[in-house]
Image 1 (cartoon, rainbow, N blue to C red):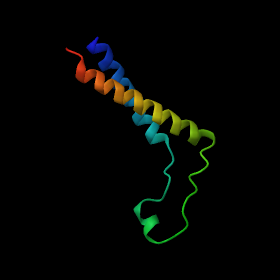
Image 2 (cartoon, helix red, strand yellow):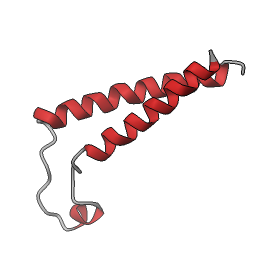
Image 3 (tube, rainbow, N blue to C red):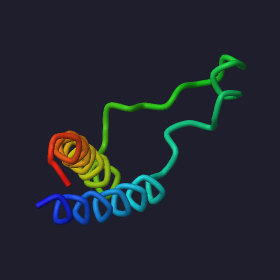
Image 4 (spheres, rainbow, N blue to C red):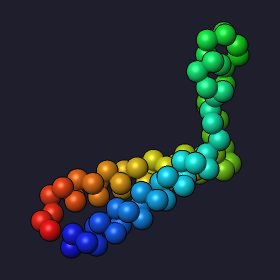
Length: 75
């Protein structure tokens, strides 16, 4: 059972990394907030951005549950 959970954990880790890297940055970095310029509107997450955001949340929850499970399962 440990190895099944471990393989799932590695697969979810790779998927989560890929999904995070595919997302568009929400701001221009730390410098954007320091100059007092206009802020981004975070209220609309339509299209692909909303799907990637939702997928990231689900994968992160699955990753956390698998991490806890791996800590409790004996080898």
